[in-house]
Length: 429
Image 1: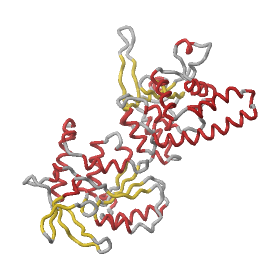
Image 2 (image 1 turned 135 degrees about the vertical axis):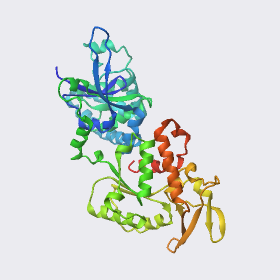
Image 3 (image 1 turned 60 degrees about the vertical axis):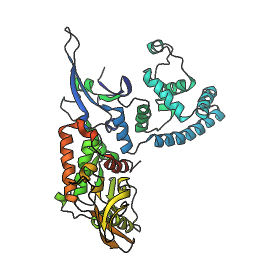
């Protein structure tokens, strides 16, 4: 009979494969998702050992978004494929190809009259009712099992999927687009799992095999999406702060990013050094996806300006930390005295984003920004908070507390750091 594995959304089997996992289907998981447990089958049966990779639908959707797959892009692909399919059907109808003009007229009608959202809703019905692609057979058990009034769009999807193996009746729809359409119909807490129990029990994998890592290594040779996104910062402080935050707040996404290590590479920090690194990667022809993120200050803005004449490839994204509300009226110290000023774009280094717990001094007041050198190109001052070390110390104490007791994470101020990651996560969307 053979051994099979199944990618399931709850109880619905989306895809299956024989003897081994399809490597592409494992990109949505990481080795940390692997779970091994036993199911009690009662006193007369031995317990059943389950081997699976699983996570929530919401986390899987976010992973696909980070990889560059969004519902907006799926809808765009859908629209292009619809045009190609309609052209093909028109040719078949005009030629009465294979004597099936009536069938092709039906398919053409569905494509012309149905919206993308109606196709998504049809997929939801398929998932909820656990319809197989063979449930329309007149002579099989599947027809009797599913006593359902099939709409025309459901018939279209299921018939073409049965006859041609074509998802939604289209050729060449991306595998991850298929995932995302069905994930879009799931509750956020629905469990998505790759059940490999049959493969392990059948001897195709050992119980301790890192199937996910093995699959990703296979794909690395040909698919750059399986590589981690490299995140470049101005210095080691930015790197440690962002890396710690990523692991704490977004653990399901942390394995998708790799940070430049200043300590082991002996790389110098600062905005100008980051510019040099960007130019080096640009000239090297490296295909990895790279995000270079500068401080939201005068130095960062000026550094980006020096890159205006550099032709930067699509796999390298250059950006700054985003403007935040806290920085719009922030205490500053300058030649004209103490003032509340907008420091976005002038003095918003990483420390400004650490949350109020880290930025309040012993008097429970925000650590002020000290204005320093004047940039003649941009005609504005550069500034930074006066006690960067103290702010960073309090931040890492907050990280330590939250690691020890994850229940207090939500009680802390992460809003501005989350705004940085919102920019990072959307870089390749």
